[in-house]
Length: 128
Image 1 (spheres, rainbow, N blue to C red):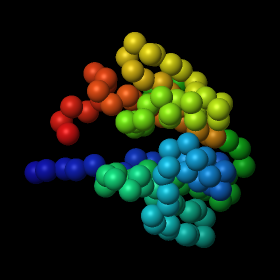
Image 2: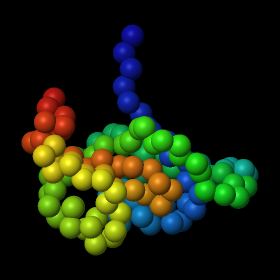
Image 3: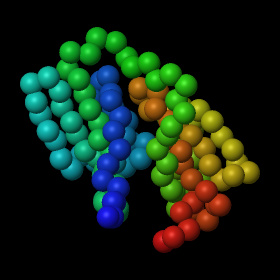
């Protein structure tokens, strides 16, 4: 039996704010939308891989999500690491840095952490 990755989900409080942030910060764009009475799901893609980030907006949600200790994160590589770092610094969304490991984290409007990994660092995927 073989499994492959399909998508990862973040629940978001303000869908339009999140869509704008993900496009500006990471270049992710909507590729599919599922509009329902109580919720909307938007799948974002990078245009290079088959991986999708699913943003789910529960329409009756009245308060931001409590993310607890946030012991999970999404990671993305950046071949233009320094350029990406400058952009995220200007956006004010960098929340943690570890230059020795070749990584830093940015935080989205809902508080989710996204790790930015320098290509060639030991954290980068070596299978490609």
